[in-house]
Structures are given as C-alpha cells and as structure tokens.
Amino acid sequence: MQLSPLQSRLAASLLASFLLIALYLTLFSPHFAIAEDVPGSSTIVLDNVDFSTSEPRGLLDPIYEAEFSAFDRGILGRAPAGVTALTNNEAMPMNAVAGSTQRFMFTVGTIPARAISEASLELRGERDGSQRRSTDSEEVEEELAPEADLDGLTKRQLAQLVYISANTCEQPRPVAASNTTADPPQLTLYVSKTDANQSPGPLADTDSQFQANFTEGAVMFNLTVSGDVYIGVYAPNATGYTGQYNFRVAASTDGYFYTYNERDDADLIWVDSDAQGALLITHNLTESTDPAVEEKIMSTQPYVMFAHNSGDKSINGLKYSYCGLQNHAQIAATKNGQFTSMVSTGMTKRGQGNLPKQQFFFSGLNSSANYLGILARDGNSSVSGNGLVGGGGHVFKATSFSTKSDHGNCGIVFNLTFCDQVAYSVPSNPNFGNSTQLAQFYDDYAKTMYENFNKSLQQVACEAPSNQRYSLARNCSQCAQAYKDWLCLVTIPRCEDFDNPAPFLHPRAMDQPFPNGERLGDAAWVLAEQNNMAAYNTSRNPRIDEIVVPGPYKELLPCEDLCYNIVQSCPASLQFSCPLPGQTGFSSSYARRQGDELSCNYPGSAHFTSSAVRLAAAWVVPVVVTLLGLFLV
Ligand SMILES: *[C@@H]1O[C@H](CO)[C@@H](O)[C@H](O)[C@H]1NC(C)=O
Ligand SMILES: *[C@@H]1O[C@H](CO)[C@@H](O)[C@H](O)[C@H]1NC(C)=O
Ligand SMILES: *[C@@H]1O[C@H](CO)[C@@H](O)[C@H](O)[C@H]1NC(C)=O
Ligand SMILES: *[C@@H]1O[C@H](CO)[C@@H](O)[C@H](O)[C@H]1NC(C)=O
Ligand SMILES: *[C@@H]1O[C@H](CO)[C@@H](O)[C@H](O)[C@H]1NC(C)=O
Ligand SMILES: *[C@@H]1O[C@H](CO)[C@@H](O)[C@H](O)[C@H]1NC(C)=O
Ligand SMILES: *[C@@H]1O[C@H](CO)[C@@H](O)[C@H](O)[C@H]1NC(C)=O
Ligand SMILES: *[C@@H]1O[C@H](CO)[C@@H](O)[C@H](O)[C@H]1NC(C)=O
Ligand SMILES: *[C@@H]1O[C@H](CO)[C@@H](O)[C@H](O)[C@H]1NC(C)=O
Ligand SMILES: *[C@@H]1O[C@H](CO)[C@@H](O)[C@H](O)[C@H]1NC(C)=O
Ligand SMILES: *[C@@H]1O[C@H](CO)[C@@H](O)[C@H](O)[C@H]1NC(C)=O
Ligand SMILES: *[C@@H]1O[C@H](CO)[C@@H](O)[C@H](O)[C@H]1NC(C)=O
Image (cartoon, rainbow, N blue to C red; front, side, top):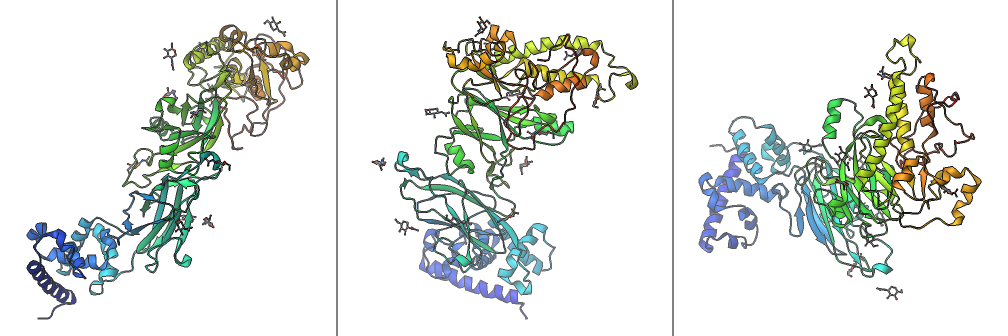
C-alpha cells in the first residue's frame, strides 16, 4: 500500500506517540503537573495533551495539535518565558520598574485555540475529499500553510498592517516634588518583526528594530508584518523619581486600540467662565442638517472630559493617556469619574449653524485659576473595553481656560429658553440667587422686550406677495431673527472681571459696591470722568442695577454688525438706526471684531482659537435714520 506524505507522517507520529505514552505511563504516575517536568522535546509534544478530555475523540486530535504547537508557538498564543502574548484588540496591563524592558509578542492571525483544533480537523477532512471549508478556516489555512507545509499546499503568508498602541497609566513620582521641574521620562516602544531580534529594546541592534517614543503617556505605531511581531516597552532610568510605571499595551490588525490627536486646533472650545465655573463645548458633531441624523446625535453624549489645574503637575506626561487621565485628572466627567457632581454635560444646538454640539459645565473650580480641559472618547463612544476596535479610547489635545476673580459678580448662564444663543457670564451677585434664577431673570426681561417689537412687526405687510414686500432681499422672519439676536445680547450683557485690562471692555456700575461691600478707589474713575460718566456709572439696562446689583464689572460689548443687521433686514418703516463709529454712543454701545480675539460679543460666541470661525459678511454702510420708537444703543 502506497502512503501519501501526510499519511506516512501520520503513521510516524502515531507510532512515536504510542511509544511516548507507553514510556510516560511506565515511568510516571499520570499526574499532569508532573508530566510538565519531562525534559527534552517530549515536553513540547505532550504539553497540550489533556488525557481527561481527549478520550472520546481518540488520540489523534492531541497529536495533531501537538504537531502544530511544536512548529508554531505563536498560533496557540504561547510565548517564551518572560514574553507576554498579546491578543488582537486586548489591552495588556503591565508594571515596569525603571531601567527594565517588558517584552510582548503578537502574531498576525492569532485566533482562539479552539478554532485551531477545528481547523486541524478540517484540514484532514479536506484530504479525505470532504467539503470545502468556510471562509473563516480559509484564513486559518493561509496562516498555517507556511509552517505546516502540508503536501505542497504552501501559500504566501498574509502580510497585514499591525497597529500597536499603548497608554501609561502610572508613572514614577518625583522624590522631592518642590525641587523637580522636569516631568518623569516617557516610556519607549521598540518593535521588531525579524526572528533574529526577538527582544527589541535599547540594547538590541538598532537596524533590526523600530523605535517610537511615548508622547504624554501614549504611543501609536504601525507596521506591516507577515508573522510574529516582537514588542519591547522600555522604562528609562529616572534619577530623582520613585515608583514604577504601569502601562497598557495593545496590538491589533483592525486599528489602534488607544489613539490621541495632536492636531493644532483643540477640539474643545472654551465658551466662558465665572469665578467657580466654566462652560465648554465641542465642535459641531455633524455637518448634516438631516433631522434624523441630528436627532440621533442629540440623543447621545459621545464625549467625556477631564479638567485639571494647570499649576498641578500630576498629569504632566500623561495628557494623551486615557487611563493616566482617569487616574490623575482632578475632575473627570466620565461615567465613574472623580467629583462627577462638579460636572454636568448635555447636548446643545447653540451657535452658528445650529448644529449639534456637546457642552460641559464645570462648577466648584478655584477662582483666578488656569485649567486644562481635555476632551476624550471612551472606546468608540458607545461601547469601550477589550475586544473592540479602538476600545481603549481617544484623547484630544488640551484646551486652556481660566476662571474669573473672586469678586463673584459675573455668573455663567446657559440653557436659556428664549435667548437660546446666550451662554456666557452675565452681571450677577451671589445674593441674587443661583444660575437658574439668574438666567430666568435675564431671559424673561428679553422676552418681554421682544413682545413690543413683535407687535410693531405685525403692522408690516409681511405676508404680502414678493413685489409688494418691503425688500426683495430680506423678509420678516429675517428681520425678527436679527432683532432677537441683537436684543438678547443687549439686554443680557456679557460680564468680565473689573480687573481685566483689555481695552475693548467697557466698565459699568462703577458707583456700586462689590458684593463683598468694597468700593472702587478714586483712580478707577479717571477714565470715566474723561468720558460719558453715565455709561460708566450704571449698567446698560437700569433693571440690572436695581434688581441684581452686581457692583463694578466690565462689559464685553455686542459686535456692531448685530445692529447693522437689523437696519438691513427690517422694514424702513420701523425706523431703526445705529450709531456709527466716532458718533456719540457708539463706543459705549458696540465694539468691533478684531481678528481671532473675542473683542465683541455675538450669538454663540466663544474663545475660538481657529481663524476659520468668523463672520464673512462685509457690511454696507448703513443708512442713518432718525431715531424714533426703538433705541438701538
Ligand atoms: C539603569 O539603572 C540600572 C541600575 O541602577 C543600571 O544597571 C543600568 O545600567 C541603567 N541603565 C541605563 C540605560 O542607564
Ligand atoms: C531642595 O533643594 C534644596 C537646595 O538645593 C535643598 O536644600 C533641599 O533639601 C531640597 N529638598 C528636598 C526635599 O530634597
Ligand atoms: C526618542 O527620544 C530619543 C531621546 O529622547 C531621541 O534621541 C530619539 O530621536 C527619539 N525618537 C523618535 C523616533 O522621536
Ligand atoms: C502608520 O504610521 C505612519 C507614520 O509612522 C502614518 O503616517 C500612517 O498614517 C500610519 N498608517 C495608518 C493606517 O494609521
Ligand atoms: C441643558 O439643557 C439640555 C437640554 O434641555 C439638557 O440636556 C442639559 O442637561 C442641560 N444642562 C447642560 C449642562 O447641558
Ligand atoms: C458649526 O458649523 C457652522 C456652519 O457650518 C459654522 O459656521 C460654525 O463655525 C461651526 N461651529 C463650530 C464650533 O465649529
Ligand atoms: C483649588 O485650590 C486648592 C488649594 O490651592 C487645591 O488644593 C485644589 O486642588 C484646587 N482645586 C481645583 C479644582 O483646582
Ligand atoms: C461601537 O462599536 C460597537 C461594536 O462594534 C458598534 O455596535 C457601535 O455601532 C460602535 N459605535 C460607534 C459610535 O461607532
Ligand atoms: C435654584 O434655586 C431654585 C429655587 O430656590 C431651585 O428650585 C433650583 O433647583 C435651584 N437650581 C439649581 C441648579 O441649584
Ligand atoms: C410674535 O407674534 C406672533 C403673532 O402674534 C406670534 O405668532 C409669535 O409667536 C410671536 N413671537 C414671539 C417670539 O413671541
Ligand atoms: C425668509 O427668507 C429666508 C432666506 O431667504 C427663507 O429661508 C425663509 O423661508 C423666508 N421666510 C419666509 C417667512 O418667507
Ligand atoms: C452715579 O449715579 C448715582 C445715581 O445712580 C449718583 O448718585 C452718583 O453721584 C453717580 N456717580 C458719579 C460719580 O457720577
């Protein structure tokens, strides 16, 4: 009888195995733990044999498995001593003392052991002329083929892109915090794909490995491989520091498990702050105006956020690490973050374009302090954790923001009902009430004022056919919108600290005491005396002085174009007019836009850093009409 190569190999293996098992049974009592001590190559062969379960399937299965395991440790996810095997999309936590290198390996196409044994059964099945395998095991075959070299079946091994990423969760602490200015050194990632260098690290041949430095506690590295990848994570010696590193490393063939974004413009925008709180928003979460898409996004809260006092160094070196921030950021707006009561988050459509954004409101911050706000995504934002592509999360570049002084007479309001574009600090007084009551006070007043205008607008022939309307270019709804935008920003002044020296800010209510009873000294009045005293002595709206009594503050004046927009959008019969620069009233009523700086207030304004966000309209010189019923100053 002629045996095929496979059959003869099977016969040889069977014979060898029976001999080995006989030897094993005669020399040792059949306790598996002892079996592991058998020296020489037999250890490898017997290693995977489980006598308790192999019985019903016969002795063939373990032999086949043993053969594969002897040839390719990687496929079964096993690695040499001291080397940790990585599984696709699973983060491996590891401690590292300074000066050591932790070693890992990853094999492209690593699959569960069960799938291997099924595949090996099926391999035999095909030799017997059985059915074709499923696509799943086809992939397996391609991985096994070069190793097994079954009967000339060798196929080109699949070259795949492997994504390696890691996050530093803990790093050494300085021995003498007050004397240490530098941050702890960053970990270094070494990657080798040649079997000649199975221990990549600082001491290995640099030509046989790649090196990638961690940045702020995170690293992302990709390479194309067709077999094993060897990974070393080196913890440098750090004089003056104590404690060890803890990091998580993950390899994947689908995408990075941990990611960060170093782009220049931060993804988080600081809207405004008061003495204890700050409001931040994300960029537009979609450009789509499809109501279904918008509604879907509005029902989610895709981001989490961390905030940390810039003066505190404990997150230095970890700013791109999700777990590092989770462990060390002072405030974490995550599912189980620190001081969650200090943060509230929600969705809003406020701002240019009325597109969905997520907003974060922090309270309980220190006054006159600088903070870092760091936006992040937990996993892919709906689910996170091992087994998911990108399950480790994403960290964005930090945004700086600061809180106001402790005068306490500027208070953030947002989520207003009528003036829905208003979200900034307004003249306030700690004795007036909480943020909700303050928002209500301003919003109600603006709404009342709007009703007067709404009545006047009803007198205009808004519904007339287009040739009889007041304008071919504008209609009544645009007039109403322009008026509302202007009215909300004029009746709800944007408040800044009285100490803020910016030249475009206008001092108000200087005659009042601060909430703590202090009054301004004579020096503060010099400017007021050279100008229109009334504009400095009082608020823009007398009700603020009577009811809120904020004390001295500075107003970020509305942008002049808000006024021009009314004149252009509304019927001439309403007789709106605006003061022009240089005319009486202009400098105490409006300010002009100056580059990227937030030099005047407009609906949806914030401390944007990108020059992309600017009103592109070039304003026509407005017609000055005599001021009648409606003041625009
Ligand atoms: C790190 O420190 C250890 C022990 O102090 C020393 O043996 C080793 O050579 C150092 N490594 C480097 C790269 O300085
Ligand atoms: C910090 O440095 C100063 C001067 O170099 C030294 O006197 C002091 O002991 C150091 N502090 C600590 C905690 O090491
Ligand atoms: C990593 O850092 C080391 C030392 O700080 C530097 O020499 C090396 O060029 C860096 N490598 C990369 C890829 O940035
Ligand atoms: C792989 O890394 C390089 C830089 O090393 C980068 O330019 C490239 O975009 C990365 N590829 C992917 C798919 O992430
Ligand atoms: C603001 O209002 C929205 C919608 O009404 C709500 O979901 C959110 O919790 C409120 N607060 C914040 C901080 O967004
Ligand atoms: C949102 O989109 C609108 C319209 O495209 C744009 O004008 C606005 O600047 C965007 N807002 C942010 C915060 O990016
Ligand atoms: C506020 O300041 C105190 C004292 O400086 C500090 O301990 C605390 O961490 C700060 N809190 C925040 C939220 O910044
Ligand atoms: C996150 O991953 C899960 C599972 O893969 C998927 O069902 C979900 O749609 C993903 N969510 C997002 C926002 O991509
Ligand atoms: C503000 O005060 C009102 C009335 O005292 C109370 O009903 C409301 O819950 C408070 N709101 C907040 C956010 O504390
Ligand atoms: C303005 O008046 C019209 C007609 O009376 C009314 O339908 C509309 O709701 C009013 N608008 C506001 C914002 O009050
Ligand atoms: C007014 O004009 C705008 C823009 O041209 C248009 O979207 C809107 O539907 C018009 N409103 C009315 C009531 O005609
Ligand atoms: C400011 O106005 C108050 C009344 O509102 C008045 O009594 C006071 O004299 C004014 N102060 C100055 C310096 O004009």
